[in-house]
Length: 97
Image (cartoon, rainbow, N blue to C red; front, top):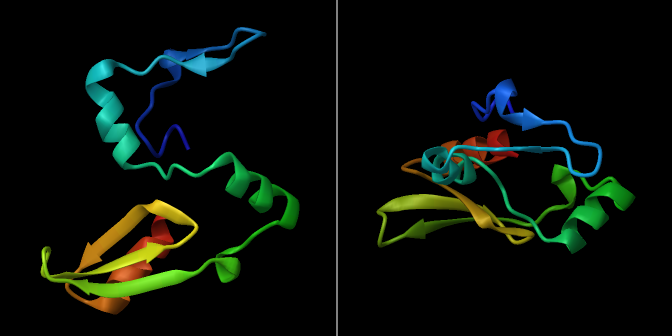
């Protein structure tokens, strides 16, 4: 995942108590925009139930403001994809998960 986000290995600190990445401030917004933020509750469901894409509730709708279709998922409200074509919006959405 770090490689997909362009996070360099040299940013990783492998301390025993708190292994973590130190991401440069100028890259934080860019990296956050590529990530899906989910609740701890949803994470537990995914882990325990082995939740798959089939278990999620998807929505595809036309946005007058954006003049494009929006693909989103009720369980992950922070994630959405815009596209002029509804099928392409959905495919792109799935590719991000």
